[in-house]
Length: 229
Length: 229
Image 1: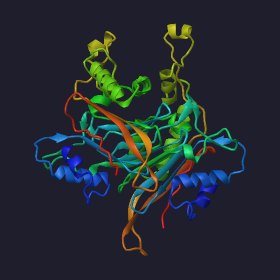
Image 2 (image 1 turned 90 degrees about the vertical axis):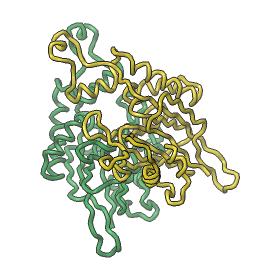
Image 3 (image 1 turned 180 degrees about the horizontal axis):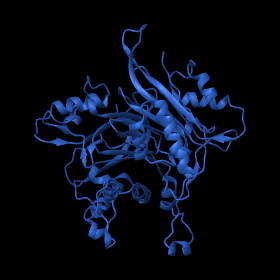
Image 4 (image 1 turned 45 degrees about the vertical axis):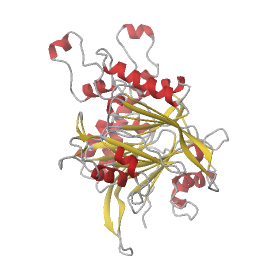
């Protein structure tokens, strides 16, 4: 992520999030692997996204989720990852997409540890009740963290697990039990809102991410990068 | 949709699906309203999408849904629509996004009547078992139609209805009943697969939608449009 920040204005990156991932990955010497998502906002309002694995990004407009990335995985709970080893995925495996943003759009981006522990409807409620992006990011991270340690919460993660055939042992099922609970994991969430601004050195107007609020409970392979000139 | 086909190579449209929607809508004299989705594939492999309402488009890669549009609605079961009346939405309300496609990607696009009656996992299974796009489109439409008239099928539509607070009367709930069933509606689905081809009059290669198979059980505001030169 630090490398992504460094390369964001690199000439070769040329506002292409997939090239950004490639360069940032190549410059990384740490051992290990991580899922990753990057997003770059153009002055025209186009948000360019590249994602490897099960981080996510959602766009909220007029109180509903208007756009959402999909997770990539090899099988349940084994996401695509960029790795220090040759066995991992590369930027070529990224899902690359764009979405045209509008004034007022809210962007919620986070790690799998976030989206595994919170429902869209909860995200919408928190966003709706928060006075700003800082407060929203903090409230969202806290709610997801609370759910993650709640063994009775029927989380998106446990619902997905059951739909894939995972569940409690048969004798517990007979007693009416089912697989529930949050998922303990790193939780990162970034909230931003789109605002149109007049750019002094430019003839037109541009779009920028205003008041980017980030609440990072633990390090994770997630970042929201912005591109404004 | 007929107007969209007519305008696909219009100079003003200039490969912008939102302008395509605007021109097609303006040229429509029929009374009524409809949800709509259009998608245009560029030679580079970028699929450009504009959607108003709850039609949908999914990209399937390596056996999983890698990309999916989100429905837009005013409230449950009341989608955004282009209309002959001034009260409807316009192309300016469209969700506009792009996704970079790869060789072998399957595109499944359909009306809300399709996605309300079939689960992603079923779409993946049918796609996996079908020898080609024609057969996949026919099998998908037939499965969704079957579900739509099945009052015992716990459809995506009935699950969504319950999650929004709709259900059977309280006395039926006491008897263990819940709101289930398919949704009777027009069902349209279009299946396409991406194939890289060498374009004779060009120095490079391009991407085209091969073997576009469409099964249309009833007219609906849905089309998959392709752009190849």
